[in-house]
Each structure stands twice: as structure tokens, then as C-alpha cells.
Picture 1 (cartoon, rainbow, N blue to C red):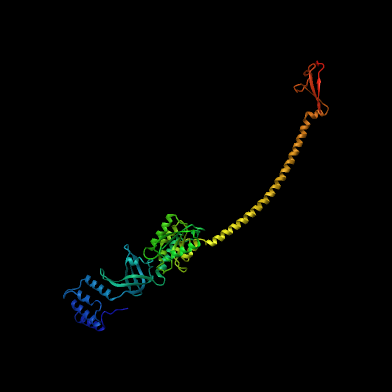
Picture 2: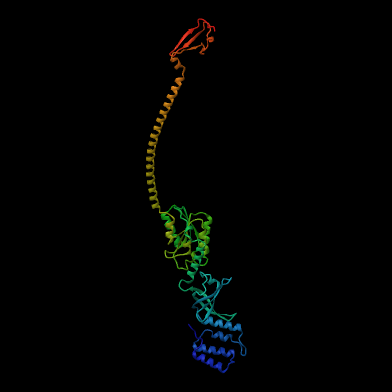
Amino acid sequence: MTWDLFSAAAAEREAAARRARPAVDNEALARAVAAAQAERGAGAPGATAWLAAAPARGEGWSVSALNALAREVVEGVLPPVWVVGEVTNFTRARSGHCYFSLRDRSAQLRCVMWRDEARRLPTAPAEGMEVRALGRLTIYEARGEFQLVVSELEGRGEGLWKLAFERLRAQLDAEGLTAPERKRALPRCPARIGVVTSADGAALRDIVSVIGRRAPWAELVLSGCRVQGDGAAAEIAAAIGRLSAAGLVEVLIVGRGGGSREDLWAFNDEAVARAICASPVPVVSAVGHETDFTITDLVADLRAPTPSAAAEAVVPDAAALRRELLGYGQRMGLAMQQALAGARAEHADASAVLAGALQRGLRARRERLAAAAARLQALSPLAVLARGYAVALGADGAVLRRPADFGARMPFTLRLADGSVPCRVEEAFEA
């Protein structure tokens, strides 16, 4: 769009005046501009500025004054505009301000984006990326350069948002932080659950309602934070860090309710992603609605489509748990009965085996005892006596073996096979 400062007639008169008198003074020029604007309409932008700033007759404009006046005219006449072009030479200064140019096939326009606006950029645009910029046209007085002061910068289509997402995703992929093998299983029945979200949001109310219904025994520990806007990402990361350091919870839900892409962007921040990866307990990402997808979904141990679904995922349903426990009890009772029946059968078998072993052992012992008795009987003196022999025993029971052992008139006993006979020596035997 083009804004004409002069009507066609006024422009023609000014051009004629220049041709006729090239050395026209500044005062006359100012008056000509004022007349042209007055002809166009009362209160035309910049007329008063031109008249008030004109130097005295015979003097020229200083460069600074002319640049300042040009800036006032440009800013006063031109409203904020959207400009479409390709980004080139994008740089972010240490101050946080961003400088770049927009170009098309035949021209380029210098641009600046101040620090406060630049903080809202999800990432720096790539060289040659087509963008749409909203800004005010101005003159940079120090160099007399025409430039656009940008307040908003958008990539065409998904543009900068998609670029920022893919850049961070590629970085986290390269570090292995999104790998499936690093995902941890959720605890089966946690007693204490951490929640990182806004203390005033609907997401917290949904989580409290679902967990109160499904697992009334579970405790919730809230680490509140902002979930959108400038500084929200840092608060989310800090809230995760607080719960991690406290060691109070067994699982963690991080999320918020639905919103626009800009509202959810804090959950695409690198600091939040790294805080989730550093958590010592499993983390469930519950950001937005089912169709929303963020970096936290990639690095979390489980992605839930909504905060309510996250609450359902981290705790079992009490009724289902009771049914499950009842089933466990029934199965345990049946298993015990089966085990007892098996033990009884094994005991009966073992008893039979043991009884047989005892009988065989006793039989073998009897046989060995009988054999030993037979051998002992064969060696027994009584067996000798049974064959017709006798043994002379003294009064003290000592065996009398030699004739000298018998004294005159000495009593002794003659031991036979089936008894004893008392005897006495009538005469001593003399060798």
C-alpha cells in the first residue's frame, strides 16, 4: 500500500518550482509542503513538523535534524504494516535485540526486533525462510536508514514454531533422551503422586477428581507454577526440580489443559525437557488435548492425551483393584488346596517307600545277626561241651587246665553241656 503526501497538482507545482528555481530555500519548501498537504486535507500528517522544524532563510538542514524530521514524518504517516519476505543475515546481539533484513527478488528492507519482542520468538528463523513481519516503519537517525521495527514475526505456514520444535527434537534425539529404551514403567499402586501444573487451572481439578474417585488412599503433592507466558518454562522446570529434590513422590504428572500453540509452548522448552529427563521417578506428560503434541511428550516416560487420562494412568481403579485382589485370594486358595493334595500324595508315597526301606533294612539286619550268631555259636565253648567235653572250674570259677591245678581233697566243679557236677579230688596228682 502507498500513502501519497501530496496531491498530483501540488506535486506538479513543486516540481515546476524546483525546475524554475533550484536554489529554493528551506522556508519556501516547508511552505510548499504545508500548502500541498492543506490542499489534500486539513491536518495532514507531518505538516506542522515541517513548518516548525524549518531552518531560517539562507541556512541548510543539518543531517541530524533532517533525519529526525524524516523519522517523524514516516512514523506519523505510516501505520503498522505486515511485510512478507525472506529472512537474511539474522543475528541476535548480546543485548537480546535481533537484526535482520527482509528481501524479495528486487529489494530488501532492514529490520530490528527489540529484546522484549524477540524473547517471544520460539527460535531464530533459518536463512532464506519466508516470514511475515508486523512492524512500524521508521528512520534510524544515526545512519539515515529506512527500517522496520518488528513487533511480531511469523513463519509462513507452521514456520518458526515447527522449526523450533524440530531443532530441539533433533538435539534430544541425538542425546538419546527420547529413546524408547530409557522409558521407565510406572509404579503399580503409588501412595504419593506429584503434580506440576497451575494451582488455579482446570487440569489440577481434573486430576484431583479422578484420583479421589479411583484411589482415595493416594496423596497428591502439588508443585505449582505458571504454565504459559514469559518465564513459564523456567517455572515448570524449577517445579519439577523441587519435587525431584524432595524425594516425596513415586510418580510425577506434568501438564496443563488445552490452549493455543503459543499457550502450550512452554512445554516445548529445552529446560523443561531436561528437568523431566533428570527426574528420579517416572514422569507422565499431560499437556493439552489428545491432538496436541509437545517435546515433553517425547521425553516423558508416558504420554497421556489429557490430565484426566494421566490421573487414570498413574493409579488403579479401587473397584477393579478389589476385584483383582478377590481373584488373587480365590486363586491362592485353590493353589493351596492343590499344593496340599499334592503334598499328601507325596507324603503317602514317601511313607510307603520309607516303610519298604525299613522292612528291607530290618530283614537284612536279621540276616546279618543270624549269621553272626551262627559264627558265634560255632566258637562258643558250650558248643564244644555239647560234643561231650567238660570243663573243670575252681571255686573261684577259674578254669583248671593242668594237673597241678588240682590239690588233694580240693573241691571243684565240672561244667558239662547241660549243667554242672560238684566234684572233689581224692588224691593229688603227682607228675
